[in-house]
Amino acid sequence: MVGFVGAGQLARMTASPAVALGVRLRLLAETADDPAAQVVPDVTVGDYRDLDTLRAFAAGCDVLTFDHEHVPTEHLQALEAEGVQVRPGSASLVHGQDKLVMRRRLQSIGVPVPRWLQVTSTGELEQFMAGCAGGAAVLKTARGGYDGKGVRVLRTAADVTDVADWFTGDAALLVEELVDFGRELSVVVARSPSGQAVAYPVVESVQVDGVCREVYAPAPGIAPSHALAAQEAALRIAQELQVTGLMAVELFDTTDGVVVNELALRPHNTGHWTIEGSVTSQFEQHLRAVLDLPLGSPTPVAAYAVMVNVLGADLADLYPAYLHCMARDPGLKIHVYGKAVRPGRKVGHVTVIGSDLGDLQGRARHAAAYLRGEIDE
Image 1: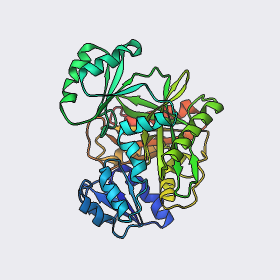
Image 2 (image 1 turned 45 degrees about the vertical axis):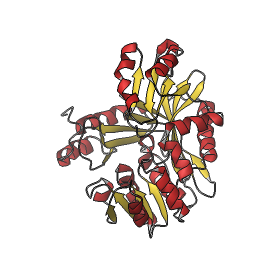
Image 3 (image 1 turned 180 degrees about the vertical axis):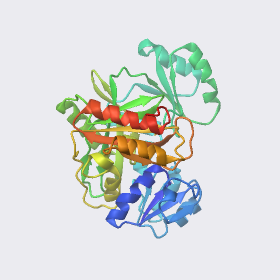
Image 4 (image 1 turned 60 degrees about the horizontal axis):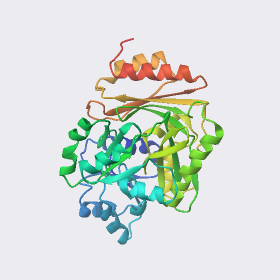
C-alpha cells in the first residue's frame, strides 16, 4: 500500500502504473473531487497540515509519498520517529520545500547556482541589485511558491517599491541575480533506498509567465557531453541529498554551463512526456523507487517527444474536442486532469512522439490550442 499525501494530477497519473504493478494506492485528498480522488477508490479527505490526520492516514501504508511538497517538515519528522516509511524522507524533501535550504546545500557541495542572498528589507534588496548585471534580480519566497507564484522579477526602483509588502510578513525571502541563459533545461532522475539511480534524457522546457508551456525530449541540439554533464550533476544531487523517488532538476543553460534553478522531489511536469515517450514512465519509476524495486529503463522509445500543456481551458464537454483531435491526429495522446478551471492553471496536456521535431511541435500545439478553445479547425 502506497499512501499519497495529495490527490492532484501527479497522483492521478500514478494510478495507471499502480494498477499494472498490482500496487494499491491510498490518497489523502483535500476534497473528494480532487483529480486523483476521481479515479482512485481509497480516499481520505483531510488536512495534510494536521499531524493527527497524517498519522491516521499513514496507518496501514507501507510507504508514504507525496503529490506535493507542502506537508510541514516537522510533521514528517514526527512520523519518521514513529517508524513510518516516508519517501522521500524529511531530510531530503526539505530541499524541495525551502529554497534557502536548497541554495545553501547546493552551494556547499559545489553545484552551480545563481548568486543569491537572504534578504529581510528593501534596503538589502536594493544593495544586492546594485551588484547585479543590468541591476536585474529575482525575489522569491523561500517556501510555498510554484508555477510563477511567490516569484517576482525586479529591474527598477519602482519594482522594489511594488514588493515592499513582501517584507511585512513572516515569510523568509531570498533574492537571486537574474541569470542570462539561452534556454531552460530539466533532468528527471530516480533513486531507490538501496542506492540504484537512473537519469532520463535532458529536456528543454518553454516557460511562459513562470508556467511550463512546452517540453521537448530530448533537448534539441544538445551536445552529448553537455547532456551527460547535466545528468551527472542531477544524479550527484540525488546522491548527496539521499533522495528516494523522483527528483526533477530545473536548469538554466548558459554559455558557462548549466546552473541549477529549482528542485522538485516528486514526479514533475517536465517528465510527463515519459508516459508515452520512454520505456518506463516517471510515474511507474516513482513507485518502483519508493518501494525499493529495481528501477526501469528510462530509454526513449522515439527520436523525440513533444508535450504541450493545456492551460486554463474549460474541458467540461470533451467529446466534441476528442472527435476533432483524435480524428485529425490518431497518434496524439490527450491527458485531462479533472481540475476546476482557473486562468493559467494546468488542466491537461497532450503528447506526440516521432522523428520530426517540427512536425511534432505543430501537431501538439494545434491539439492544445483546440482543447483550449483558441481555434476551431
